[in-house]
Image (cartoon, rainbow, N blue to C red; front, side, top):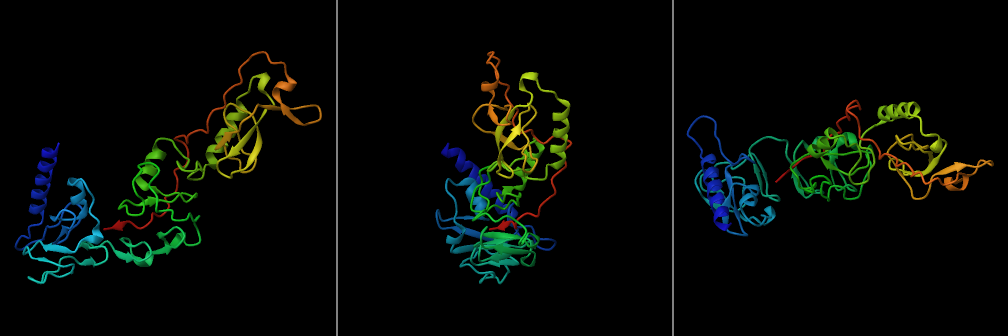
Amino acid sequence: MRRKKESRMEDDQSSDSSVEELPAGGSERYGCKHYRRKARLVAPCCDKVYPCRFCHDEVEDHQLDRKTVREVVCAACGHRQGILQTCTNCDIVLAQYFCAVCRLYDDEDKKQYHCGGCGICRVGGRDLFYHCDICDMCLPNNLRDNHKCVEKASRTNCAVCMEDIHTSRISSHIPPCGHMIHKPCFRMLVDRGYYACPTCNVAMFKMDSVWSKLDQEVAETQMPERYQNCYAKILCNDCQTKSVAPFHIIGLKCGGCGSYNTARGDGPLYKRNAKGELVPFSELDDDDGEPEPVVQPPPAAPAAAPAPADEPADAEEQH
């Protein structure tokens, strides 16, 4: 197992070295698959040189803490030096964007900026984002005073892939509930028919047209006589209202917001007695042993459901 890993590391380092050559004339090609740069990081944890921390993490059995890096190697002349933007030996600029805090070198213009609140560098342009102190991350300006704050929302893992949100280089989708999900993971959920947040079960986009279709299905689907005019206790996942809803095999509709994204509570079905009071079904009807029907879970968003509007993603990290 160790031999295989060493072989993989040798292959990766050999490949990275060829990428970092600076040909005479023409456009320069250097860096790695993650960054274009003329600096290679010296990893203090193992004293090995890598184009970036991702290249290091791909082949080592430990992770490189970028902020512990104290030295870099110039890809042009091989000079080893401290964390500086310019090589002190050949005077070449190691990268157009340089952050001494994050040890970030990048020659591609991604409108990078360092956010002191986030503690990392992000891309997208400082003028287009602001730091939300409650969510503890940078958000697009159009979400200022227009989103649900969740304390330290980004300091969690994506509920789908379980990878970190805050330091991820993948942009995130911000649903109405505020529980961030990596945008590719969000798209995967929608493509597979899931519409509710995997963390709190609140709908991640407007479902009005879907609920209207279910209203029509309920109206067109007659329940067996035994179960007509029955009621069940429910909890709405969208508005958190506890109520009593007409029992139907298609779904249980919230009387507060009209959502079918509900869960049936414990207890029996109910019917109204002569006084109009809700009493357990069994007190009004002789038990003939017929099993109680099982209500369907909240339906997945059908293909005809409206596609969710893209909400601006948070700024991606660069590190």
